[in-house]
Length: 243
Image (cartoon, rainbow, N blue to C red; front, side, top):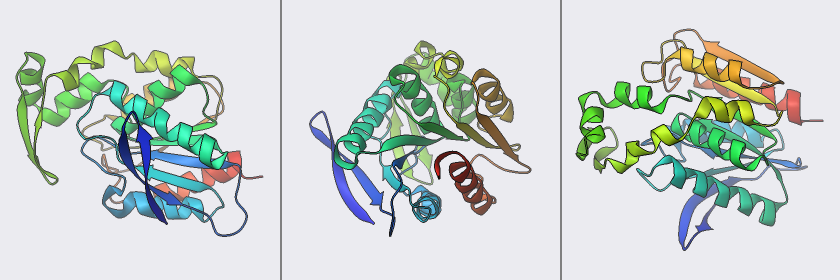
């Protein structure tokens, strides 16, 4: 595994590259983490990346600039895609988790240069999602107040600008506008942050070929189903991209 930086308008995105041993495919998977997450994903993202690279597919994990809005995340995905194309000569599959999946949808609809899209616990309705995640803090952000978050990742301040963009992105429309590529949606039916009905709506909105797997008892992180999720992603990749 190689650690490096990817240029994005004068700053560096921290990234990790998993290169396969032996013959490489023409594809690379870019993993886009969720809100308050990281490229390591508590170890789960690393395990998924190792499973994928073991199939002959390169994987790049990277850190979004923390606490930035969707437009910034789309810009950063674009920088990573351009890096993969110019330095590795690969066709790109995006694997987005939670809000990282939302940014991946918007990016793919805007640029139409992605070979496949995998969405893990991904919301299309960010307003509903952050209402569930932040409670009354979301209402404070909506009226222009900043709020402090104290969670497992530490204490941070979230500004109103973060939620102001939500109404400008119509992610169901974006999903429907994506040219036909393989799409795989993974979701837990006990997800308290992104209700499974959001995944079902994304599935209905996208074209074929498409597949959806719902994990019984699965939470937002699929914390008790991480091995099954990795196996499901590997199976989908093998079916659609390994010849």
